[in-house]
Structures are given as C-alpha cells and as structure tokens.
Amino acid sequence: MPQTRQPRSNAERQAAFRRRRMEAHTALEAAKGLAPLPPIATIPGWRRWRQVIEQVEKALREVHEQMQSYYDERSEDWQSSDKAEEFTAKTESVESLAEHAAECLAELD
Image (tube, rainbow, N blue to C red):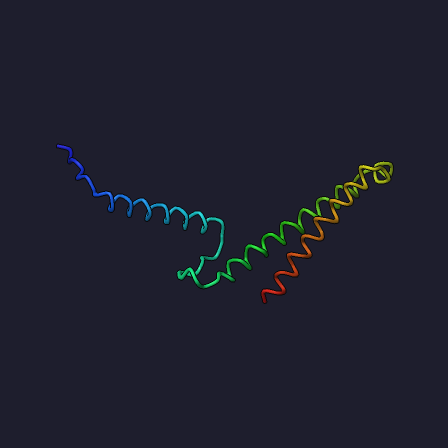
C-alpha cells in the first residue's frame, strides 16, 4: 500500500521551501564559479566582488580586442567612413570601461 503523506504545518512547508530555494541559489552561484558571500550579512563580500569585477574586466578586454580586429579587417574606404567613426567611438568607450574596471580592482587591493 502506498503511504499517505502527513500534511505539514505551514511553518514546516515554508521552512522547506526557503531551504530548497537557498540550496538552488547556492548551486547556481557555485556553477558560475563565484566565491560565496560571507555567512554574516554585515560583512562585505570583497573577495566575491573583486572576482566579479575581474570577470567583467576580462570580458571587456576580449570585446575590445574583437572590435579592434573587426575594424582592422575592414577596407580602407570603410575605415574612412562615418560608420567607422561611430564604431571607433564605441570601441573607445568599451576600452574606457575596461580601464575603469581595472582602476576599481586596483582600489580594492
């Protein structure tokens, strides 16, 4: 005979839900490769934050390199066009963001 489930109290159900939600959140963060936040909420998570900013800087550097190689592969006619000027401005803003992320990392050390 199949067993019937005992109905839980609302408090038990809510506690189980919060536990499952926290476990799923922790597993998701671990899959992203992020360092855990400190267990006490009043302690800043500098290690994790630094790690995220490092990832952002790396991604921005990669985007800048790809944009630069895209620009270099275009014809000279395209490079002297208005579209190229707009593209160059966007490339410079990505580079500026990467430099700003590097400055933030230096300040965190």
